[in-house]
Length: 111
Length: 114
Image (cartoon, rainbow over all chains, first blue to last red):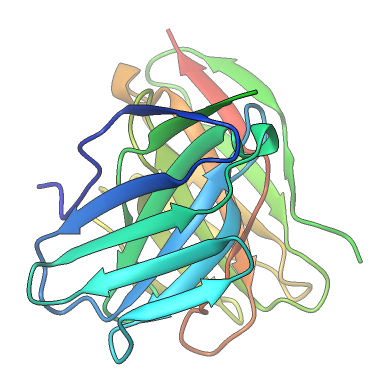
């Protein structure tokens, strides 16, 4: 039972444009959400997080939006850079112990 | 500051065998979580250890067991290996009594079961 879903396996964006990565979840008990970036042969790297008391969190070029009623979150990267090319995972947790991950979206930023 | 390290990098085992994977947590971190990432999937939570005690467990059978040592390093043991256990095993360390908002992952151990 996949409680966190990333329905787009891949995304290609021109350098300088906006990248929007989407994530849906089914468990209404989730109250903490994270995005990780993963390069080949490396472990995931924490990118940005948001708790359910907020609907937006911003860190530099990265912004995460949370729509609790739709059980949907998205990661916006503006402007996109070639170094952003990686696999992005969203994750969610209800207890800060067990984190549920999506299947990932492979982002390619074209120079 | 030393990051999360895992050993070995790659491992090949035969079905029915037992395997031990190791993880050294980031300096100062007292919590270690283990994940299994099958090909094309996201990481799946196996269990978490906080101060040498299991602090949460995902939907994995008892043949997946773990240990955390006083220096907060950790082991993942898998008995009676099955073909479906072939995956990348990731450990993540964090600081917190109830998990943590930020987990720092190691590069993983690639296990192949034949």
